[in-house]
Length: 231
Length: 127
Image 1 (cartoon, rainbow over the protein chains, first blue to last red):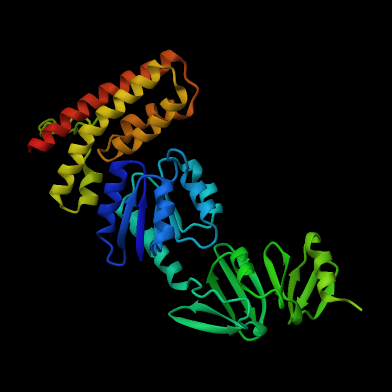
Image 2: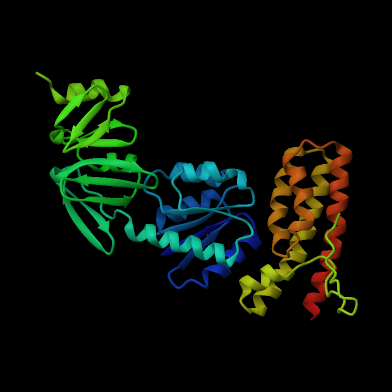
């Protein structure tokens, strides 16, 4: 994995650089001391993993991640203050490590990052595609959009339900929503996107697809009703 | 109160260093002595900058800058194992609303420990 260190402290950058030497799977591409430089590096180079300090002058690490949007590398936050942990995890990051970063803690974090990296969805279909590619363990698998019944947000992952199998990809529902065709899919809940053509029944705030019960939020009900074109 | 770092055995060797603990540095160096020396030299340089900045911000009563720099200093001192001695003072400055006297007391305590740490690091660099 190509990685980047972003920390405004010289010694923190050096210690991380030293730790990265222990891990053959990591290639250090660059180090920088502020979010602005990090943004430029991430935009211009293939960076898979960022070791990111939180408290930095001008723009914090948390603000940087929010600014990067969905198409961002994996992030490991590093901070001297534990109180940022909750905010950090809300951003769907790989890990949050407190300074000073020990070898043991660093390696645990890298194992996690490698696992997520391996399972990341890797292909962004165009709106015309009728399939998506996902990384399924060590292979890249094609799934027809018409086979997908629903997408469900589950922590750092999105579960993809089909009639025969479910898959899990490291992604956010928001990211998936932006990639799948609007002809088939509709958000019905903050944790669910469904294939409208697969809906069997709708009763109150629940819809059923192939024996799976899926909640429908009040906020999405009217859009769903319009989309179903009920006679 | 500073933790007692002396060994209990009466005939034990006197500790080499007064305040620094090198276990973290040695753990991440994995025997890379050049790296250890490089970090030690940077520590000597950076801790002086940190102490000057903290004193300047306190003198100018610039509390925001003082808090920011107290946070920054945490990364300088951690590598020399000074967290147990200095974190309470630096975090008090960073997170609490201290009076001027309390801030000065913290800064005096920090400066005292850092002077011992610098002496220790010089011993380390001569070893």
